[in-house]
Image (cartoon, rainbow, N blue to C red; front, side, top):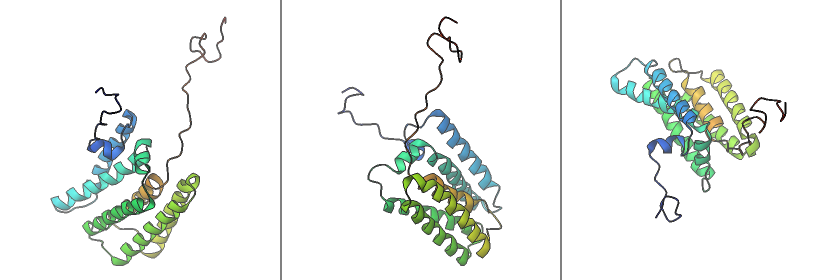
Length: 207
């Protein structure tokens, strides 16, 4: 069997491909890698605690930043919304993000029950709004959900004194990067110049 033979099993994606989506370009991989490193740095500078808590927080921050950038790229978005993926799957994914937020506030020793309750309600309510919106409008609804959620949190329980960056990034990841369905890519053709113009814009044959 040859690699192009339909009977040849497709290679199983490795962990990196599962994270950023198979077929990601070099630029997309660089962007996600940079975001992961930035998240690790951000997490390591947030908490003055023991090595275990610091390690877990650093990994949470890295996944938050890296996942946000990854889901803004085409491969990860198409994988998240592949055929067979339903709203139930998406809400289960949101539940995992909610657990990460709960772990984060516990590590920061700011596990106030009211704050957790408000954020969880807003997280799932906003997710339902985005999922029920028209695909063409989902990203716009997601941006509105981020803004409204932050206003409500600030007006009721306030952002965390330590690690206040986590919630805005989490809401952006869920409402803007992950939940909106990817739209058809617009065809973009790179300018290569006329066939007889030597690649010079405006040049014509015989000039």
